[in-house]
Image 1 (cartoon, rainbow, N blue to C red):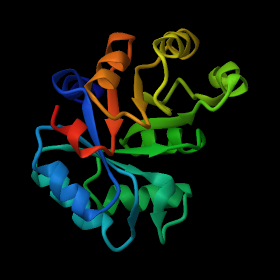
Image 2: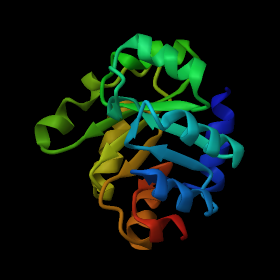
Image 3: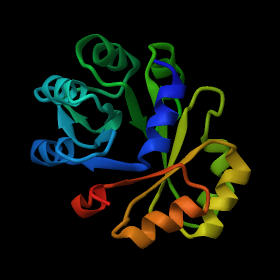
Image 4: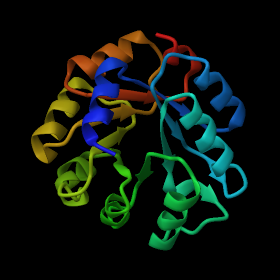
Length: 189
């Protein structure tokens, strides 16, 4: 799948619905969001969740590190590619990015910015050759968004503790390409 489609979807609607379970998914499918992040899943529901997202014409990502019953090894990536309709993966482990990309997945690396050390070392955590997007958490100030963009030169998604329109507008106006939120009211902005 071409990244052009992904970036167009983000430009059309920069709010991403992050779902924690199947009831969240049903609500997200009923909104205008075009991209859905499945944050928690099991080997028993990934197929159905991916098919529902695909049937709704939405782009689906699965958090690769939080699939219960599947190890986070490269063989599991191949299983996902052959047995689900997910378009991409989210991972906290840079080592999964090249293998996922080679299989044709969109790739998002999730990075937690908890202190000045994690900010200082962010450029060493990102395999810029293969990753499509970087997701930074938790919701950060405009200064931090600008600083991260200067260090890694990749489109950013801001997540974590996005609670209202002000948070969304702050992230977007400071250079984020999108925001991701589990807050159902944010999905409807």
